[in-house]
Amino acid sequence: MTEQQRWDAPAEYPLTRENLVALLDNRIPAIRIPGFARAEECAAFRKAMETANVKHYHIANPVQYIGMAQVEYRWGGSKEEYFRDVRQAYEDQAYVFRNSFDPVRRLIDLLGELWPHPVEIASEPGYGEYFAGIIRIASKGIDLHADYAPFNTPGYTIEHVNAQLGWNLFVEAPGAGGITSVHNAPWSPVMDGDKPPQSYGLARGIVAGAQVFRYAPAQGEVVLFNSRNPHEVSAGEGEEAGGRLQVGSFIGRMPDERLVLWA
Ligand SMILES: O=C(O)CCC(=O)C(=O)O
Ligand SMILES: [Fe+2]
Image (cartoon, rainbow, N blue to C red; front, side):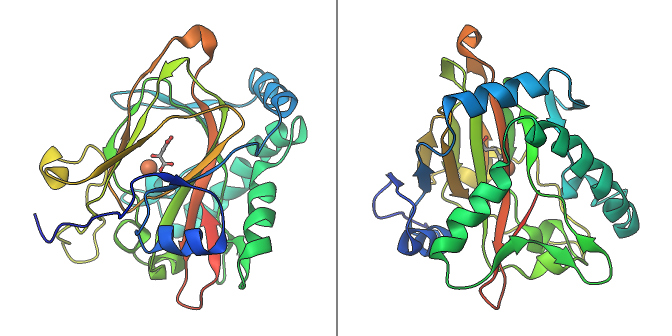
């Protein structure tokens, strides 16, 4: 372990400009936005999911999803393929948002009110906008991983972010379980040239001894955390109360202080 990082007060904070800066700088573990979506909006979202184009990740804990994740293109896919596929991903997402509401737009507007610089979907010169707002059903949990574009995404403009957050709106939450653990041990993998390292299913040794913060999903609420910190999600229990249906993206801080979103 390198030098221990400590959050002063391991708690959830409300959304303010100061707290957003503190989260970006990893001085606090999480920000929660209660009342982000109304119960009727969540119900409409859930209903739209029943007829939407849901896909599956074939990993140890299967995750169903709509949209796409940029990291899926890091070893196999080219930039051309990624930006070509963005269009279809937005069409699949639009089906759900059109029949419920648009949480990505709502989040951008909320952040835009308090951030003194632009808040926008990330875009790549010569290619266009990234995809943001992946919808996931992660009821079986998610293994230990870290999300940080300077390591995961060399060769794309988002590699220049100097901080990265993840945000998720919980459209539906399990009755128990589905707890996210965020380990205060900012990911600093040993790089092999500019080849993106393994970032999923990380060895537990990298978080040994680190401070941990846990948060629970709650319907209609958004939680933001610093996604460079290795994090994992436990399996949901009490699924009669609901699955773990969520929509989110990353928020990166560019050197010019713009906040840019992608998934
Ligand atoms: O669902 C969560 O609480 C976190 C999911 C996650 O790994 C992410 O948004 O990067
Ligand atoms: Fe993550």
